[in-house]
Image 1: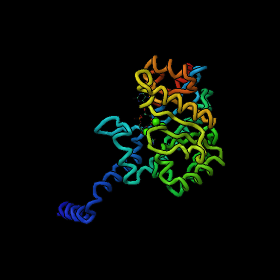
Image 2: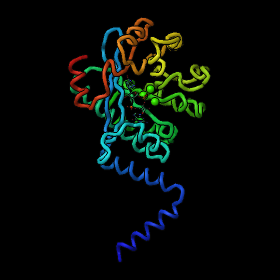
Image 3: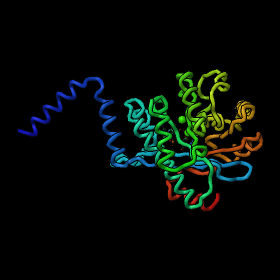
Image 4: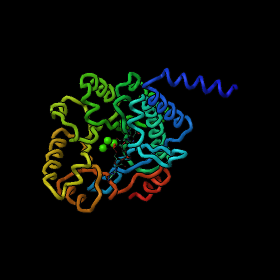
Length: 276
Ligand code: C2E
Ligand code: CA
Ligand code: CA
Ligand code: CA
């Protein structure tokens, strides 16, 4: 009878929650996954194309789902964003990435930047700046070796408040990258206004670089980036040919499966030890 009573209660609770039930369920699941430490970071190197050195490391979240196996961000990040769980998850990502970076540094492993993806919701949150500062303090990681990756649409959603947050981040030394550069239908004027350090050329441009006029676009993007003295990273390099063209057009840094795949921390440490 007790059991039945609880089911009845849950039934009504769900009914009352109505249309948002699905999102609230997602939120519960995601926060539970966080509490149960089911999220894990993979790491992918950013390689300097001249020296071959590992200049940076991008942290990429995965979910070790007890039933569904290893899930990529495409299957849960949007939900996390929609229900708001991304704020808590994003905090965990930031701390985990900075702790890991500091641990590798303490082991004497050589790389410069730890790059962490930040979502719209997280960036707009009032506590974001405070959170970044507290993570830096807790982990001991140097601010100017943390790069936050934000995509164009996040930066342009509210350019006035984004500008304020970016300047505050810059004043504590943290670096900013524009992720997926070129994919938003945005005016280039904002480039002048926003305090960013790095432009990541979206992999859609890199993909077609050898077979179409996309190398004209990539050349132009690199030219603009250099004009602004931004660091430039080409994303999604999958072939030797793409790499050769990027080198040829003086792209300084690249990331992609051809260079290395995202790896778990232990594997990445070995990769760093091998020095490429
Ligand atoms: P992104 O920031 O553009 O990350 C690059 C994505 O491209 C990663 O996918 C990476 O594994 C993949 N990639 C790397 N090299 C290649 C390549 O040569 N070819 C192809 N086709 N793909 C390549 P992943 O890890 O599935 O992440 C997808 C997106 O999820 C990321 O895109 C980012 O927007 C988001 N994301 C990942 N981790 C986090 C996180 O911790 N927080 C937030 N808010 N978003 C994250
Ligand atoms: Ca990214
Ligand atoms: Ca990207
Ligand atoms: Ca992206």
